[in-house]
Every structure is written in C-alpha cells, then in structure tokens.
Image (cartoon, rainbow, N blue to C red):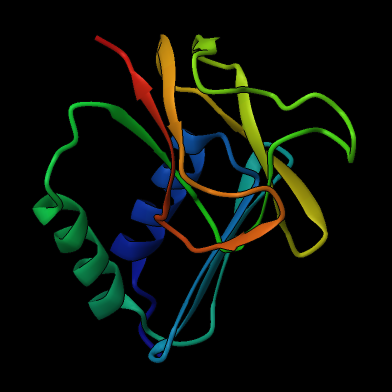
Length: 146
C-alpha cells in the first residue's frame, strides 16, 4: 500500500497548529491517525484517505468567511463549557479572551482536550451546548477580534 505522505504532513501540520496531541480522520475510504508521542510524531495509516483530505481542504477554502473568528472543533467528541460539573464556565458571551485562553474542553476517547483561543477578542456567540456531541470542523464559538 502506498502511504499518503502529503496527507500525513497536512494532518500533522494541523495537529501542531491547534496544539493537539492526537487527531484521527476517519472516512468511508479509510482512517488516518496522527499522535504526538514525546518529541517525535508517530503516524499510522490503515487505508488511503487522500481524496477525503483533499475534499476537506477544498471545502475549507470554499466556505464563506465570517466577519468573526470562528473556533472550530478539531475532532469529534463531547463539548464541555467548564472544567468540571458545577464549575464556572471557561467563557461566556461578552468574555474577553487572548491567545492561549481555554475556550472549552472537548472529550474524545476519554481524553479531555482543551481548545485554546487563537486570537484576542470578545466572545460574541457560543454555538455548542454543554455536554453536546460535536463534529470535526463544527463552529463552536465566534469571537469578535476586530
């Protein structure tokens, strides 16, 4: 089987940009998993996914641009607004955020993944509900960064 190195590099770049430790892209054509393990990145591929990765890139380029920064889900999982049940949420509409501030937690495969802000701004909209199942690429939070 020929390994789709360009797709692995693209997913690895996305993993680093989003500060994630692991990402899995699964489609009807196959599955691509990339995990950061120590300083090295470990890659595993079960089936070719080049067509889907290419389709996703095209969809991202064709999507209309919002006037706000949109924090999207880097994975399929469960959306949590607070670090624990009953705790204060990380953000509310009107909260000021800066790069690195935790916006929410996404639980995937029993791993709690913090989603950090990438911009300075004010939270204008929280689109996901607490404890909601979310999809890869789903817009979760809008931030006015103007």
